Length: 468
Picture (cartoon, rainbow, N blue to C red):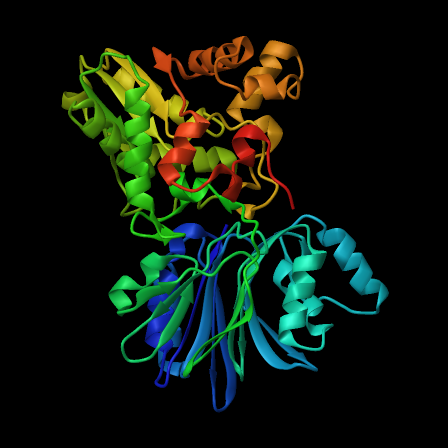
């Protein structure tokens, strides 16, 4: 997915930029970057963070960075920020985006005799393409609006200019953008409100879908009002969001407690305790424990000192190995016990299958899996964080293929709890995992736990709904 942070003040902002960007590190694993603006112009630094932390790579750059405005990014895809010199003036840009029609847009620009100097994952750098589209317009605002009109997918962005920072949220609000303000007059804008607390910022505003703001050291100006339609990704609350963050004023940790409570209310299994797969599954398990009035215990502990990044290797087999190595079972807690295990979701199911096997090897009497969201049946079309979730990767689709011979048959029935096909799919996944029972979250319970109307949430992964 990725996350960004921008800040502007009447004094040097480099420390705020460094730590604020670092607080988005859970959203990306490949590249990190920062750009600042001072009297001499732009300064930029980009590093590969696949095998290290953001802060360890950028600490060496801090002594040479100076400026009262800057933007930073953690990216799962391309190198950013991009520096551009255009008829609008010089600017730096970072994005959190997915462009499904990138080949068509690239071809159109090449026919105009434009050229691209950056590439990401073997294709056009999406951030450079977005910068080109902006530069075709008469103003930064009209350029941003042009991006909204032309791309199929999603795009939130920050532009660092000599006039200030332009902050724009995706036209359907699929990704969050949050404003913060500090008592000394400094402003910040981030993908995560958790970036603000320890830097002294208070969350001041949640920009709406398609909203564009211009932020200077003297204040914030709305350049484009928010649109009415919103499709913010519901999975942010289930998994990707940091526990202390808020989106649309709704806290992630509190939402996960409500998700766990909903799982418990619908669960008739008799268990000795509940456990959560670290990290995001823990809050769901605590909610389950509180609602069902049974103990919460840690069947696993997570070992991170030598495994700092969850998705470090590019090879899927190695990623599975890293995930398995990081979770260490606790035999005295597990042995002879019946227990429920809450996880944020089941994507491919292979990691969970390995985890379940190790729990049985350590003496578990019975295991009952309780994912905090419904069955993932449809690969995400709108955000990069699930680019790896191809149709054939999804545990739900693999079960459907085994039952039907093809993976795209009767999908509406399979996505609807209570139908015969739904129960057959769940049982097939349960068999693969090798557990006593498997019970997914109901979509209406997830929506209620989040607290926004269904039509304001993107639930495409579970029910196939959504639009560009």
